[in-house]
Image (tube, rainbow, N blue to C red; front, side):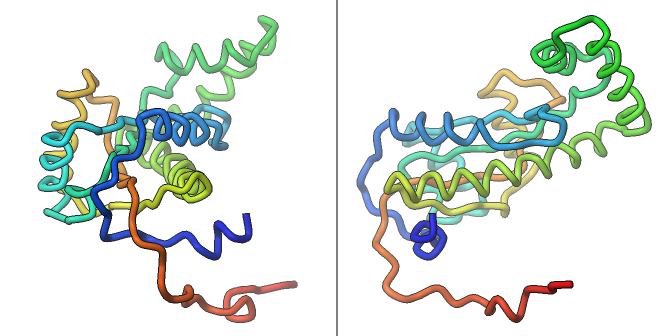
Length: 203
């Protein structure tokens, strides 16, 4: 892990090497194990692998070349169907609550937790969980010999349309980040970071 944290960097120049679909599936499979608030896992991961779709996605991401030239791109999508009455929330609770009493207690908890949140607030809540997953994703990729770049610059409306049309998703789903994956040159210079003393407050 120490070497991953020291060596991982945002790759902005991928080469033509295509990584295997199996490798990308492994990266996503490990990423889905990431922690999330209340264990709700409010995300989906859309893998883009076809050349034309990647080029289209690159244009949506403000024509950033690291997107249009990557091997695969993963769009991280937040879901906001987390209120009581939503099928997804109920399925999450049923996985964990092994008695009727635990189920009822959990549903009461979520009723209180989410009752005053509108859809945008729910999306913001889910987005924070997606950021946790992305932090894990890029380190998992590095550990498997795959370079990555996190993309937050994109046309929100166009990307939302892209994921909903291509993923068959409704308006409960909103893309929040894109991760470009591929092969690139090894970094030729050390990381420049603030020292531990600069960032640590220890009381």
